[in-house]
Image 1 (cartoon, one colour):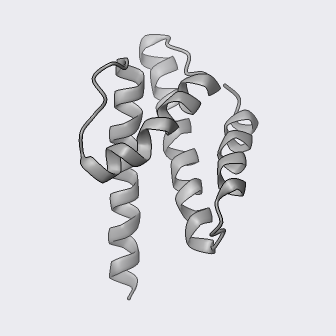
Image 2 (cartoon, one colour):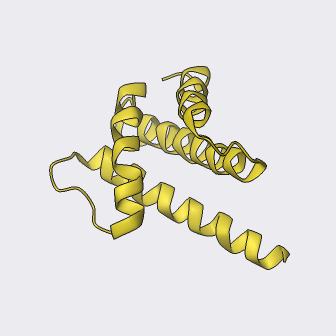
Length: 101
């Protein structure tokens, strides 16, 4: 998965959002950064290649996971890892924003 492919994926999701504020753009930037870090880690440590399709499939679970806190049971460890990473990254972003106020 190339960085440009991932950015295109997240941008396509962002474009469907009715609210394209700077906050939305920052959320997607955090998701891109954390996904690229995870991709690099998995390739270096396990030789696992994270694909755009992996990310696309995981995005389908993100909102339900954030709303309920329940991880999907029928998915693989890459998707579970990404969901946990995204949640932690978004939590840090929220904490950073709250500290700036």
